[in-house]
Image (cartoon, rainbow, N blue to C red; front, side, top):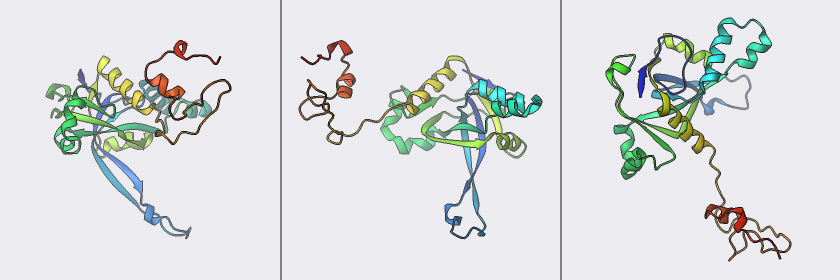
Length: 223
C-alpha cells in the first residue's frame, strides 16, 4: 500500500508530506490605506497529502528544469499544489466521535482513512500513525515555494500506491463534485405545460424522482 517517498523528483499524487508551512494574509491588516503594511502569519500542517494529479506534477517539474520556450513553459506550470489536510486518528477522534467506525468503513464521504505507515515505508524511517483526510480541509501552496521549502523543514514521507491511491483520488473527486439540493419548500415552482408543476407540493419534482432511483422511462409523458 505504501512506498517511501523519493528524495528528489516531482511530488506525486498520494504522497504524504509533513511539516508543511502555509503563509496566510492577516485580514486585519487590509485597510483603506494603500500605504499600510500588510501582515502575514504562518501555519504549519503536521501532515498533508498531495491531491494534484501526477501528470500535472510531472509536466510542471520537467518544464521548470528544461523548457526554454516561455509560452510552452507557462502552459505546463502548476501555480499551486492542491493538498488535503491529514489528522492523526488520535487527534480527530474527539471531533467525529462515534462516526469514526463509519469513516474507517468508507461510509462518510467527507473523510478518508489511511492506515498506519510502517517504518520501512517512511522515507524518514519513523513510521506514521493512522491518518484521516478531511476533504473539507484542503489548501494550496505555491508550487515553487513548496519545493524550495524542502530545504527548510518540509519532509517527504511516503507514497500511497496503486489502487489505494486511485481510491483516495476517486473519493476526493466524488466529494468535490457533489451537488447540494435546496431544502424542501425553497425550490421555485416551474410549470411545464401538460404536467404537474415541478416541485409543487404533493408532487415530487424531477430531481427528487431521480434521487429515488426512478429511470427516465418511468416518468410519465404529458397526456
